[in-house]
Structure formats: C-alpha cells, structure tokens
Image 1 (spheres, rainbow, N blue to C red):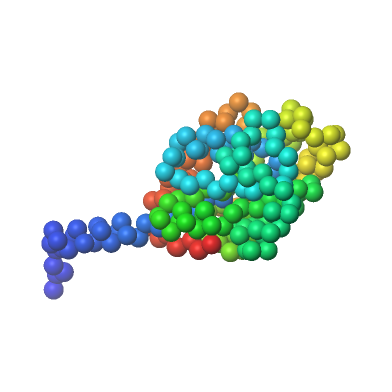
Image 2: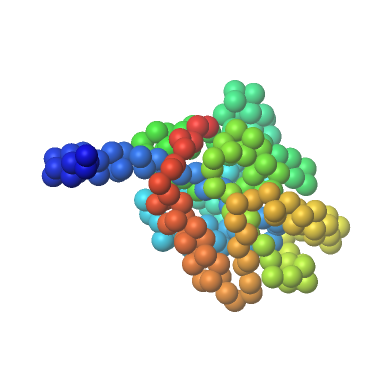
Length: 217
C-alpha cells in the first residue's frame, strides 16, 4: 500500500517543525596572541548584528583604542574574584599575570531568547568552555607563519621584550592544540577579508545544520 501524500496542512506542520528544530548556536573563536582575534570580531559585529557577542572581563590595563564594554570589561582584581566566587564566569584564565573571564549571565540570556552567540577567548579558555559546552562550534584562528605572528606582536608595542617573548613562546604551544578545534582558519597578512569569509561560511553552515543540539551554559 502506497503512503498517502502529505496534505497542505500536514506539510505546513512539518515545515513548522523543521523551523522549531533551529537552536541558537554558540561560536567560540580562539587562537594565539597577536593573530588578529579582535580585528576578526570587529568585522563580524558589522556582518552579524543579530548575533550576541560575549564581552570578556579582564584585569589588565586598557590598551589605546579599546572601549570598555565593547572590547573588554575592564575591572580590578577584587571585583573579578568576587564575580568568580559567585560562579558568574563561564571560564576563567590567568594569562601573563592578568585574569580573564567570560560573564555567564549575558550569554545565557542570549541563548534563552534564541540568539546565536560568539565569544572570543584564548586557547586555554576555549578548552574550559568545551568541557561544559562540547556541542558549541570551535574555530581556531591561525597565523600564516610564526615570523608574521612575531611581527604582529612587536607592532603592538604594548609590552616589554621579555613579556613579548613569553607570549610568542606560549603561541607556539597553543598552535599544537589547533587540532582540538572544529575548524582552522588562517588570518594571513592583508587578507583579513578572506578569513572573515571563511568564518562567515562556517557560521552560516552551522546555522543550517539539520541536527542542532541545545547549548547549555
């Protein structure tokens, strides 16, 4: 016996069910210091105004051009530790004697209202988030070469030579962990647009996946 063809009403119900399967996605963008994560995030903000961008809290000093609440939340160590003890951070890390943490509440609220979320963290932070949200999408931003990465670090002129070389040494160790991520995108010199296109393709494809597990933070 042949199966009956779906009616217009049942077909619309099925389509509604397909739409309901859409779950908000969490995208975690990481990579070594100096690879250009901030530049990538700024471009993605323009391309995806509907996405919530998680802002990391940090105890380090503000760099020239950075805006509180946009690039980071700049707070003192006492405030940071208070919020950490309250469980307010999804992940925390101490990097070069500075503390970093992604506030949990804004991310939870965004996911609850059906909004996709992008967070930018270091490689250590990405591993911490993966432990509690393995179904998120993890993107590793890689430099075209270590020589170029060192040039970028030097061009920032925000640290003394010893601190700079510590970052460079740590970057070598972080690169080894790139294989732990779902995607690897190269951010080559003067080709930022290419990196943005690749990340946009990842975001768009993940949004269209037929099976989208619910992300819980």
